[in-house]
Structures are given as structure tokens and as C-alpha cells.
Length: 314
Image 1 (cartoon, rainbow, N blue to C red):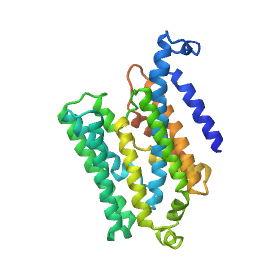
Image 2 (cartoon, rainbow, N blue to C red; image 1 turned 90 degrees about the vertical axis):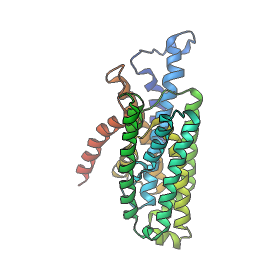
Image 3 (cartoon, one colour; image 1 turned 30 degrees about the vertical axis):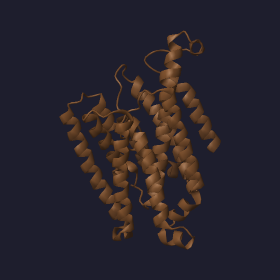
Image 4 (cartoon, rainbow, N blue to C red; image 1 turned 180 degrees about the vertical axis):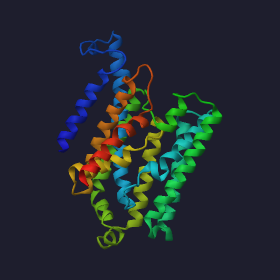
């Protein structure tokens, strides 16, 4: 199964850069003097790498958050971590702070919210993970509303920065940036694989994890901060893309019934990567040169599919 997923991801990565408003032929991409060569290697292939990386990370994060909080609704977007990072970056752009400095502000915002969630986990609230989930959902609504107000006052145009931050959008990036994000996503997947036994213990409940020698508080704190840091970096490029982290892990469970956390995370990463890559292609080719927000397409495609599979299972 894992090799099939890898093959699917590689084939998708090779195929999707040929699709777009401007036609690109295989013979032209090997000739540096052609426009097709520059489009393929410097625009579409880096963007495809970002789509794969973002989709894989978001889906894997959703699987991990659902394990950490013992709740099928847990994911970075629902808990407000994604909205906090997005709001920080949007506020930075409103006051004309761009680039790495703006991303650092978004990173700090995500860390503050993560620290708050960790503090709640360590307090009496931690006895009820459902209460923490509800708190995160409420905070997400508040942060999203503030973000909308900020973008409204900034008078950003529809289809530009505002739509990117509100609904997510895969950006055009340089080759070095795409390789950096791909490297981070693979390092993250490798780290989750190494943490597989601890996550297996946490999935059985805090009491069982403690008897197996895993400290639920320490493990949850470490995982939350590291995952939030990666999410903040990702949000700095793509904005908030909901749904992927929430539904892809459930689709994997419904279709493949993975027996271990490692398999769940690996399959979620693979299917999330391919799903977001093809969603981005659709966002670009449905009505060129208009580009639709990718978060809207992921919901329109994945939502009915998830409901159908859920209905078939019942």
C-alpha cells in the first residue's frame, strides 16, 4: 500500500505540471530556450511540490490531533492554531511587514495559542478533552471573525490577499522555497514515524499510556508545539486551508482500517498530498485565468465524497 501511494504521488507530481491555461509539451520542457521550459521547471513544478507538501502535512496533522485530543473533530483549523497564524501574518501585512518578519509574527501567534491549549491540557480542563475542543472551536470562530474584519478594513481585493488568507491558496514560489517545504514535510513525516509507539499509547487513552511508560502531558506538549511550528510556516505560504486535516484521516480509516498510528499517519499524508495537488490543478484550470480559492474546492470535492462513504458504512 505504501509503495502504491508513493507511486501515485510521483506520477501526480510528474503529470500535473503539464496542466494549465498555457499548454506545455514534453518535448519542450527539455529545451531551456523555450517558454514551456520556464513554465514547467520554475512555476508549475515548484507549485506542485508545495501542494504535495501542504496536503500531506495538513492531513497528517489532522490524524495526530485526533489522537492527541481523543476527538474525531480535532484538527489545527478547528482548534484555531491555523487561524491564529493566519491572523498574525495578515496583521503584519496590513502594517506593511512582509516576508520573513511577517511569517515570524504568524509563528508567534500560533505559538501563543498553542501555549494556551497546552496550559488548558495541564489544568483541570485537561480532564475533559471535549471541553478543550469546544474552547478551540469557539476561539477559531473569534479569530476568523477578527481576520475578516482586518481584511475588510484593509480593503484588499477579492481574489488577492484576502481570499488567500480566508480560504487558502497555493502560491507560486521559487524552486528553493518548494524544496525547503518538501524537505520539512518529509522530515515531519519521519519524526511522526519515529514517534509512532508513543502515539499508539496515547490513542489508547492517557491512563493506558501512563501504564506503558509514556507521559501523556509531556508527549502532548512536545507534539503540539512542534506541529504548531510547522503549521505556522506552512500557513505563511498557503493561508488557512480547512477540511483536509479533518476529513482525510477519516477517509483513510473508512477505506483502509489502518491498525497502527504509523499507518494512519503515512496513509493520511499520502492521500492528503495527492488530494490537495489535484485540487490545486482544478483551481487553476476550471476557468482560466481566474484561480479559485483551493479551500473552497477541497470542501466541495471532499465533503460529498466523505458523506457518501459514511452513508455506505452505516
